[in-house]
Length: 225
Image (cartoon, rainbow, N blue to C red; front, top):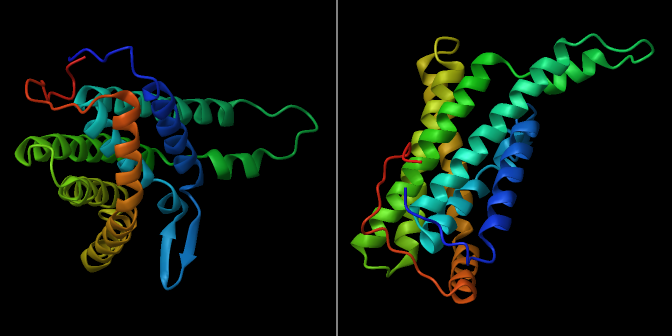
């Protein structure tokens, strides 16, 4: 695994923000919201931002930094699920009458839990890998091709996996396909619209950190710690 320089001023803060956004997304994911004609998970409001973070990590600090953030996010989410399960299982104290409501909010269904973790890892690494490779291919020019290209790939992997693993076998194929296409379209549109903000953040960080990492000798194995 490539060394991540300790001289970076903002990497730890950005990694912390990434993990927090991921955890909040998982907490609100169970509510189905109406946004215009679309019925979507509450996570759609925030979760796509994690892909913008992944783009920033890879573009500014390199694939190794992105890999580190992804694994921290994965273990943080796994801990959230584990503690929710344990806390629900513990008997409530006498006089505390909110066990049912607590279970509804924090009662992650095992199938959804597994689908979310698998899709997160696969989608984030697909996004980061595509971003790093496109940066080498474009020699660091035309940032928009990388931010949009990596989003197209990463969100395709994430959305297809999470919907298929969560709902496969319980709904018709046409419904499954409609859910995948709708979710994918909304996520990609969200991040395409955020491209100007991504440009601003990336360029500001490159100036502040005095770095612009190219992963020419990087080991892209996601498990290379």
